[in-house]
Image 1 (cartoon, rainbow, N blue to C red):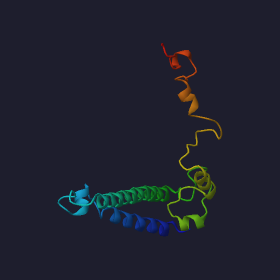
Image 2 (cartoon, rainbow, N blue to C red; image 1 turned 30 degrees about the vertical axis):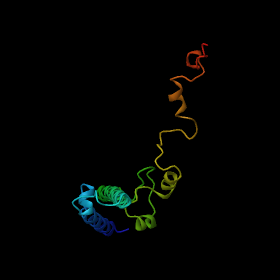
Image 3 (cartoon, rainbow, N blue to C red; image 1 turned 90 degrees about the vertical axis):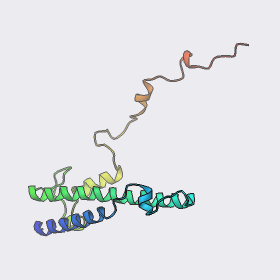
Image 4 (cartoon, one colour; image 1 turned 60 degrees about the vertical axis):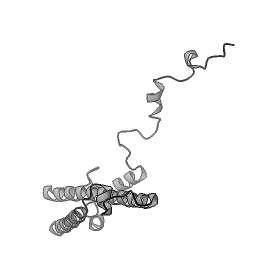
Length: 152
């Protein structure tokens, strides 16, 4: 695999993302609408615009995440670690790097992440982790926590 070609591809992708992220720097809803006031609009119109603004914000957040991944991939090329999986150290398939040039994991590690996205790898595979934390405060089984009988 020609790493200089991959570096050029990654740099082009990064430039496109940076241009797209700098296109809209709106700060508030009025600036987003290009109107002096949003009071005269129907509430559904304002809600639709707010939804679209939130959608744009999620796209921008995704673009920022991609920019970080691309910058990390460029750094891995510079360090000579581009073709190595960051999780297990195995070689990443060249087909995977052609399709996804900012991939940092091999196919097996990526599949593990797809099964449990966002799951910390420090947790064991099985078990209940939240109940012991809540149980330390007690349950309603104690006498002091039962409802009082009516004193009539």
